Image 1 (cartoon, rainbow, N blue to C red):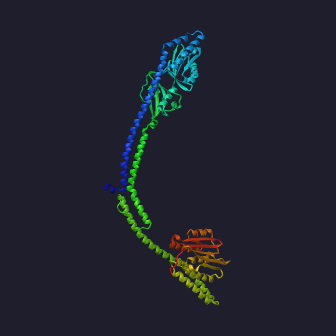
Image 2: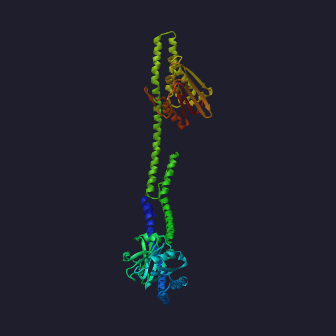
Image 3: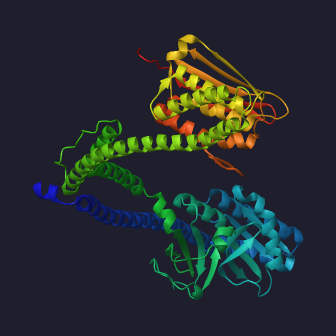
Length: 573
C-alpha cells in the first residue's frame, strides 16, 4: 500500500486499468469463441438432421411411386389401354385407370402428389391429383399433351417447372404409352424452410452426372459437376449466391442422381443463438462492476485531491487568504500539488498587499494629475481676465479686480486643498458658485444659474470637483451665442441614495457622442481629448465601486442632462 501511494497518478491509473480490463477482455474473447463455435455446430447439426429427415421422406415417396408402376395392376391397365379397339372401349379403360390412380392418390401413403398416363397418338392424357394441388391439374395435363411424344422424354426422374411450381417428374414408357408421377418440389421446399426456420436459407436440388455420385458430407462440392435446380421458383433460391459466409449442407437422394443442398447464412445462424444474449448480460454486469471499481479508484486517486484544491481555491476567492491545505496527499503528485498550492497562496497574499499599496499610490497619482489637468488652463484664462480688467482702467475696475481675485483665490484654495477623498456638498456647491462668478465676468449675460438643494444636504459627502466638472462642461461647450443658456443643479435625498442632476439648455451633443461617453470611452475631436467626464467616472468607480451610477442624455440644440446616483454619506460633525 505504501509503495502504491508513492507512485505517480498516471502510474496508479494505468495499473488499475491493466489489472481490471485486460483479464476481463481475454476471458470475454475466449468465452465468445467457444460458445459461438459450440452453438454454430449445434445449429448446423440441427439443420442437417432436419434436412436428412425431409430427404428420407422424399426418397420414400419416390420409391413408393416407382414401386406402384412395377406392380401387376400397372401392366394390366397398360394392356387394356393398348388393346382398346374402339373409342368407347378406350374411354372405359381410361376411366377405370384414372379411378385406380385417383384411389392411389387419395388412399396411398407416402406416395406421389399426382399420377398420370398419356397416349400421344390418341392425344389423350389424364392426371389424378391430390386435393391440395387440384388447381394445378389443367396445367399438368396440358404440359403432358405438349411434351409427350416419340423420343421427347426419357424414363426416370427429372425436374420440370410447370405452372407456378417446380415438379419432380417420374416417367416410364411402354409401346408409346407414358405412365408416371409428380412430386411438388415447392411444397417440399416450404416444409424444409418452415422446419429450418431461417429467413435467408437456400434449398435446391443438384443433379449429378451419375446416380449415386454424391455423398452425405457437408464439404463444398463443385456445383459445376451437375445441374443445380431450385426446389421451387423462389427468387431467393434461384438468385442468392453461395459465399464464404454460407454453411453448405448436402443430403443425396438414394441412387437417383440428385442431391438436396441447404445453404445457411452464418450471420443469421449466429443471431438465432441464445448465447449472445446471456453473454451480453454477463458483459454488462462485468462492465458495470468495472466502471464502479474504476470510479472508486479515480475518486481516490484523482477526484478527491482535485476537489480538495478546488475547495481551497474557493476559500481564497471568498477572501479567506489564510486558508491552506494539508500537505499530506493520496499520492506523490497530490502531495506536490498541495505544497505548490500553499506556496502559491503565500505568494498571493504578499502580492495582494503590494497591489493594494500600488493601487493607493496610483489613485493618489490620478488625483494629482486631475488637479494638474484642470487647474493650469483655468488659471491662465483667469489671469488674462485680470490683466484685461487692469488694462481697461475703467470706473470700478479696482473693485472688480478685488472681487474677481477673491473668487479665484477661494476656488483655487478649494481645488488645491481637496486632492482626494470626499468633501461636504455645501463646500462643493460653494466652489461651483465661485467658479460661475468668475465665468459671469468672462461671459456676461450669457447664462443663468439655478440651484435646488435642501439645506440639510449640505453635510452630505461627495468626491471633490464632481459637480463642478459638469457645470464647467456646460460653460465650455453648451453656451449658445444667440440665446441665454440655463444651468440647473438639483440635489435630493431618496432613502439611502443621493441623487444629483446637472442640466443645461445649451448646444447639446450628438447621440453617437453620448453613446461613446456612456461606454466609458475618452471622447476626442479636433480640439483633442476630453477627459473630464472620464476622470469623474473613474473617481466614482474608485470610491464607490459598482454602487454608483452615471447617466447622460443629450440632443443637439436641446441641452444636456447628467444624472448621478451615489450612496448617501454624511460628515459626523
